[in-house]
Amino acid sequence: MPIVSDIHLSLKMKELLRREGIKKYSKLRPGMKSLIHELLASIKTKHLLEPAIAYEIYSVTEVRQDQLSLEGYTSVHGQLLSSVLSEAKELAVVVCTIGPKLEKEATDYFRQEKPLRGLLLDGIGSAAVDSLSQEVCKFIMHEASSRGYQASSPLNSGMPGFPITEQWHLFQLVPAEEIGVSLTLSGMMVPQKSASMVIGIGPRMKTWTQAEVCACCNLKETCPYQIHT
Picture (tube, rainbow, N blue to C red):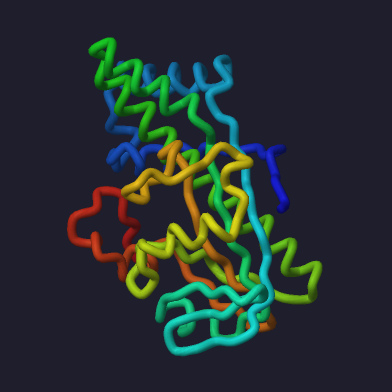
């Protein structure tokens, strides 16, 4: 049950602004720029980011039309998995989180009637999760390389062809509780600034850009955070 906690996150301004729904930094008012930088500084001084990764790697024993069968007589379901991971020899199941501190700080701002600070900090948290997900991909890519394989891009439950209900199954396959992540009765992760994913490992794995993911997402017409090709 591998756990990784020694992780450095790089918060890039472009990704941060995308998560805030802001298109251009140059068009921000000086006061807004100052507030963003103040919040970024507070994240470091208050140690609000506690990134951690929990993962397991399973051998793929069979690929069917709508499922990947794994060692231990278990399986992960979804037509998307079988179509893009048909060459997978192994499957990495991952849960990652930036911890609860930033989320609590943002909630406290709302309680103090400082909604702008709360919204901006929440956006920074989302950007941090994006950065952590990228670190996950790098880590699994290294694991795949050590096996003489390649790693696919990540697949998240809730994507078309990968039912959100599979979230419950993923949490049975990886020790998420060891990094403080759990599911509510409705299937929401706690802390909310967390992510779950599967990554195929094999000789010829498919990869795709974030823009390509956005293009096939069910929310592509309304999502303010989408990336265009």
